[in-house]
Length: 288
Image (cartoon, rainbow, N blue to C red; front, side):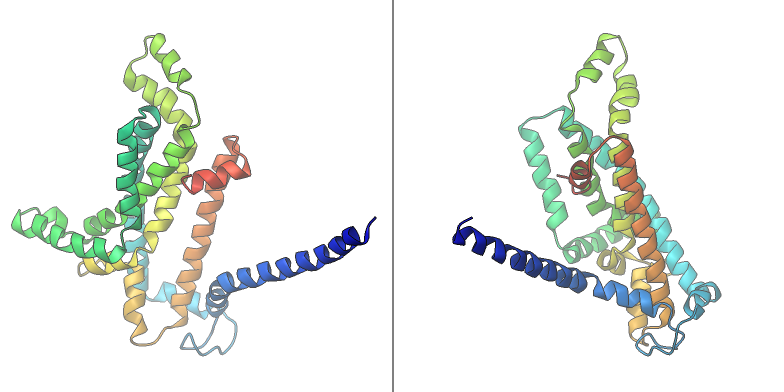
């Protein structure tokens, strides 16, 4: 072994160790705030910034405060409705892009990308006068309902996400089963229901769960389109900042974090059972 090769091998462990340390520091930088909020959710003090000791007082407060329960319920209900809307529209859009390719697909993907990258403040400012116009000027009281406003507003970005995921799932699969179904005199609806939708179902379920988690924290749009009596949890947290953050806010945040992690784990499990590899799962969840 030459002296040059021995020098390279000696430098390689040092480089690997440096990269490992750097990776750990990056992970700590990313997850340290989340770890802090989880730890402080067990704070027994009156304020979040003053840690007095460990306990479950903050979680008991959630049960004792109806205003907190109402805010969480509004967020969960509107996120579920938004996920249903996004899944229904996004699934059809994703299937259409995968099974009917053409120049229109790239234009449509451009529109979805525009929806994805548009700042939420722009969407919020656009939605508020639109809902007022529909609800008051056109006399459609449905759009004066807080649940309807929050559900529609949260479903915009989620629809694009579901479309990406469903398209990514089907674009690599041949349409031979759909063609065989048509050759066997199945109606287009039967082919769609029993073949196409069945093949896309793992991505549909993944898209629904991701749409639900994304809709839970749609803070900016929710702050603009909400009406009195339907204050979602993110808006409640913003209003609570003025009087000081309390441990129950961290407790609810911890619960929502756990629900989000469970949803992501279910997404990965569904895709794994569908036969996807770890790389394919990451690609599908990212809409790649």
